[in-house]
Length: 101
Image (cartoon, rainbow, N blue to C red; front, side):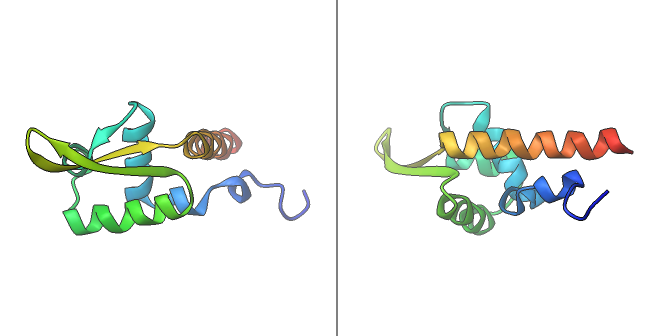
């Protein structure tokens, strides 16, 4: 096997972080999710979630929308089509690694 053929080379380094993988798993399952719901589901602090969401947003994987709900500020997160494809490709690479074992 030549260098570069192992499926680990197909892993998405942006998504590979356990927290970012968890965020993407939440977001691909829904159209959008409120920031607090994602925070509570992934079990991270507000600041940690903000940092990881910024990374995902910078990669074009997550869209952030701010507004109001019931008179209070609210932030909604959603996976973009690019993010959904990246997540599925990342899962396929993980599956290929497992199958090779």
